[in-house]
Length: 439
Ligand SMILES: NC(=O)c1ccc[n+]([C@@H]2O[C@H](COP(=O)([O-])OP(=O)(O)OC[C@H]3O[C@@H](n4cnc5c(N)ncnc54)[C@H](O)[C@@H]3O)[C@@H](O)[C@H]2O)c1
Image 1 (cartoon, rainbow, N blue to C red):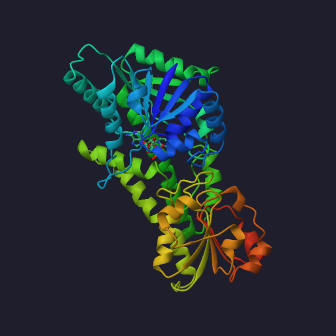
Image 2 (cartoon, helix red, strand yellow):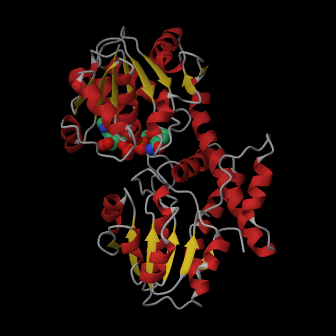
Image 3 (cartoon, rainbow, N blue to C red):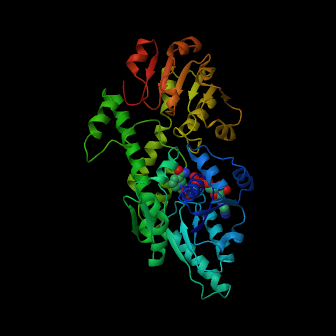
């Protein structure tokens, strides 16, 4: 089977590499020449555990190819996946220009039947827009007889666990409108789900909606718990206990009940905004999701507020150690990360920031430049710091040597944005500790 995956970001590169690992002949396409040349040399442009070896192995086995030239390979393919970015535009809508650009290239060069699958997260109806654009162009080219199919196959992988998620998905959602497309997608996904075939076929509109609804649900759980955590602080309850008590109810479950300093990343913020906007477009107000977004925006300021309260609003001239720049552990992605909101507030307040992250320093530098000191390790970050703030729960931060920190820090203050430390233990070591949702 021969397929192309257009867009070699977190989703496209992981999907392409994992399909190749199952024996599919995959060509990954990107307009970024630098990225493609690096990939040909075995250099992976993103940090994603386990990805490098799969890419290198399959590239060497000549099952995984890289090109910037979609037209030249298009007509040898059975399936083309569109996995390009769909960032927010200035109104909060999904910017579909990358998706439509790929559709135009396909429309201008395709000359044999093809299945075009939208893997990017796109508003309901986008796959039909892709279909209609291609049909119109084909008719203009006089190719009225040429048939093609479209399908929707939203991606649910999590950055930081993307390879594993793709190899053993909870489920695969596929929206189709023909038996032929269904058969092709079944053939492609069967190797991943040999023991328990969990592809859920549905219509295309429902498939596109499923992706947004899933992200909206997860974001809702996070904002809900952050709201509960903030209330816990005010009434003297401990959200860690509340979470355990709630999560053991099988109707609720334990996942995504962790309070923190807000959700970030390349998906939740933009997808929530896009869904609110899609609803507005059809005259419906998503009141709940607006609240989810508002709570999240407020939560992203919580670490700064806690710091400011601790120092009585006098932050000018302080030095703050910050552990964790990526929006979550095991990724270098800093898009919409809570750490960036915090750093901007700290810099505005005249604070010196010493930041450390195991993977995201280069990405952060691209956004923040040299406004921050990028430390070599956690202790270097803590040197002469008046407080330590932890916005991301990387494993390497979980068991630091507190005796060393006591020596290198100027004062013993810890603000824990992910509740990874034991406040009682830290208090016994002489640290002033604040977590989220606990006294
Ligand atoms: N990142 C995630 O965890 C995740 C998870 C599920 C779904 N998604 C969705 O998948 C899509 C891709 O996300 P991502 O994080 O991989 O994006 P990304 O920004 O990391 O990568 C997109 C890639 O597409 C390339 N591109 C842009 N226009 C192109 C064109 N015309 N032809 C070829 N390549 C082009 C870019 O150069 C870039 O390499 C988005 O819709 C996103 O919402 C992302």
